[in-house]
Every structure is written in structure tokens, then in C-alpha cells.
Image 1: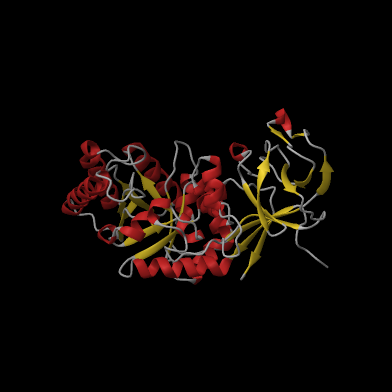
Image 2 (image 1 turned 90 degrees about the horizontal axis):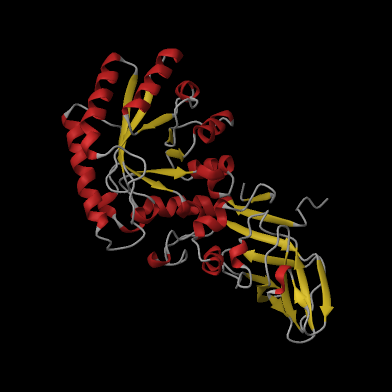
Length: 378
């Protein structure tokens, strides 16, 4: 019995995930590696990819939301997990009870962690996040002394253990950007202050995927790798995946749903933004923006059909789009490859990012739950 889906599906190569983790560890040989599996592992499947990353030597896992972290624990995944996107009233106690490291950027969050620890009857593991210039999460330098002081006091009373000090780059994907050395200097200053006040963290970390690949001075005790774990280049300026020694883990495939011949002057898809110039063959691809195919790539998105690269003809609709085959013919049921490794001439996620005027992060992450995942190398 053939269990492969027939409409559209994403093949996830877990051996590629393992190989990418090993390649990234080699770039930061003196640091531990955190595999970031937020957003369902950037669309690849958090539980399966977390296990594969751990197989290859990732000692930490990272999530954005507490629900993501708790889902990993519910699946039986052990080892340190850092979760960094908290709001008042969140599942603080559940995270403490699950031994999840909680990122703290302000005193109110520390207070929530303390209350959760008291309710759970155990010590909360917290990491203090410094805003060194990204201007998003994290504690501003002017408020760092207050946060560190409150955390040290909470540690003395036994409600929390400070396990980490960390920050995040704004422009590590732009080599030579002037913010990079400024952020590193700020991070070192904030580290020095916390350590002077008695903080002895297990890990200090600021490096994301681009910094892991290009800034060895930023590696400290731990590097946090997200997109690179899944074999996609975090920025075209840094090089292609192949040039960085990475292998894309996701290949998005569909079956051709219909092939038909239409006359010259025939409109295609909503709005008739594409009109045939001559009699031609059209192929219907049964995937659309409800599956995560970016509508912004209408008229430009590349697809490999019948051994050649075609472009989306007209608008991407909710469930389908069309490609113009010209004089070529394929049959219903033939394979269309929207993106993959590029090793066989098929488009890549980066090609779709360029077509949609976005970043490759969005292309793989937006592939929705309606698209089944088929795991290889499991």
C-alpha cells in the first residue's frame, strides 16, 4: 500500500538535520549547540527534528512559546530547553514543573517565575536576557542592575537558579554591519556586571545561525542555531546552503491535478493577470496559499514539472495554482517539485523567497498543517 500523500506533501530528511547539526558544531567546536525548534521546527516538525538534532550532538533545544516547550516534554524529550516568549498569566508553573528554562527580561517576569516556583515547590531555572541593541525582548542596560539584583536575591532565597545570560543579534546576517561589534561590547559589559554581582551561569550565549557561521568571537558557551539546522542559508550574503556546508531538509512536492490545452488569449486564474499568448498546455498544481504557498509569488514562483522549471501562471489561489507548459505535455499524477535541495535542478526555498520578495525563513515556516510531512532517515 502506498502511504505517500498524493495532493501535496513535504519530505523531511532527518539525516540532513543531523548532518547540519554536525556541520554547525564543527563551526563552533568549543561551544555547546542549541537547536531551535520553534514554530514546529520552522515547519519541519518539532518533535522529530528535536530528536534528530539531539542524535547529532545538540545539547540544548530552544522554543519561542512555553506551549512549544511543554509539547516537547509531553513527547518525552529530555535535556535542557530554553523558552523565551512569555506573557503575564502564561503557564509559568507548568514550565517550572517541566524543568524548562525560562527567559526573563524584566522584574515582573522574574516575579512570575518566583511565584510559580513557590507554587510548584521547586526551583525555577531562569536565564536573564539582555537587550544589547536589537530593541525587542531583553532588559535594557539602564535596567540591568535592577534585574540582576532581583535575580540574585531570588536565587539566594532558593526560588530561582540563574542558568544563563544571553542576548540576540540584530544584524548578524549582514557581515560588517556596525551594530555587531557594538552589541558584542554591550553583551560583554552586561556579562561582566552580572558575574561581578555573583551570577555564575551555566551558559552565556548571543550567537544565532549567522553568527555561528561567521563570528567565532561571539560563540561564548553556546550557539543557538535555527534555520541553519534545517539546511537553509540564513542570508544570501553569507552564501548558499551548499557553500555553507548545509543540506536543505525539506522538499515540497505535489501531484499534477489536471492538464489541459487552452487557446491563445485565454485568461488564467483570478483577475486574468496572465493571458496565454498562443495555444498552450496548462497544468494545475493542487496547492495554494492555504498550504503556505506565498501569494506574493504569483507570476514568479518556480516549479519543476516534467523536468523543466516553470513559473506560476497568474495568481496563486487558496488551494491551487497553474503553470504554463507551452508545447510540453505531462499527465495528471506526475510529480511537481516546488522546492528542494537544488541538487537535481529543482528550485530551492531561497528561489521562492526571491520570487515572493521575502526571506527563506518565511518560505519553509509558512508551509501549513494541511501539508502532510513525510519523514526520511528516521
